[in-house]
Image (tube, rainbow, N blue to C red; front, top):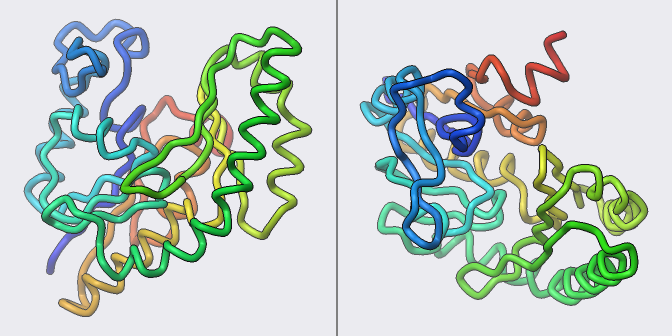
Length: 242
């Protein structure tokens, strides 16, 4: 029976050094844009990574292609990036059928993302918030708005977030720590995972799917799998298992 692991990356398989607590033996598994070590795996995470690589391992991440390329975890199948907006084939190119599906939706939302970026930038400047924001583009598509910085300042964007979510069904805001993303409906990990599930089920109807993630926003795609795995210290465990 084939086994497919759909796994989030950051704070699931790797994390920054300050989040590794008292772990001494760490493996560097990602670098920043300057080539400096930025994220690490504990021995337990590295063992899990090795196990995933014995089967079909598909990252399901908010990272864009350039950021995922800086992660030194081998992938041996498709890739889901940009919070689900982009699906890459085994060669690292955007999947043709997915690109066709995405084109119309992305065009419709391009101006909406530009408008909301300007609104965020206006509030950041007006209130002197410790935030930086931009639209994440990948493969020519405007995928989502990324906002990073002080978590206490992120909450001051609540009105914009509510207005954004009211534009359409499944327009969402993802927040975890010092990261926020304003996600249009096509930037959806669940949709991308279901798309690839059908691909693998067509090949073998008995394929086993396992989902891994740390964030509440990972739960929808994880629940599409036969089993779910979460880190013991995560947003999911803090919010759902207490």
